[in-house]
Amino acid sequence: TFRGVGEGSVLKRLESSISGSINPGLFNFTGQGNQGAIEGIRFRSIVFDGNRSSTSSLVGPTSGSIDPSRSTAESLVFLKYATNIAITECRFMDSGGPGVHAEYSSAIILTNNIFSKLGRSYEPEIRPLEVYETSSSIIQGNIFEFCTASPYFFGVEFSTINNNIIRS
Image 1 (cartoon, rainbow, N blue to C red):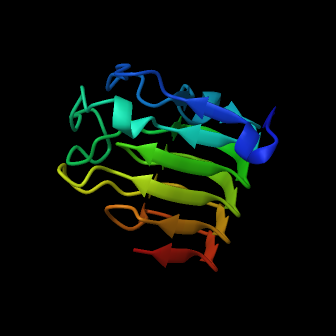
Image 2 (tube, one colour):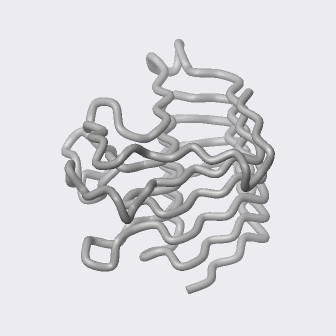
């Protein structure tokens, strides 16, 4: 469990730090397939700052990604083969990549979060939230503001996605 006190708990990417395609993201939680999934991680009231103004895209779109046309290297939270993950009342801001990228996971709860100023105007559009091949999840009450694209869901089954706000 990672618990903060809101705006006073900031996790900030270092200047020009490189996240490769093998271990993308500020936080990377990758399990060992369906049998060895990462389980039970909780984030609450934390600000994830991608430090966009002091970093540059050192790694572009990756061929190892489920969607090779997108860049997952600068994700703030990267989840692969994860289950029973809760991210509540957090802020994802100023990143050149997605706030949360999840693939091949289940039971992910994303509630009452703010995704703000994600992506760079001079690069390909970045989705603030990317969810691929995921089931039994709840994504509700989130705000997506001033991002270069909208949230993206593909292969999502038995999930609830509602009451989210998108502002441009």
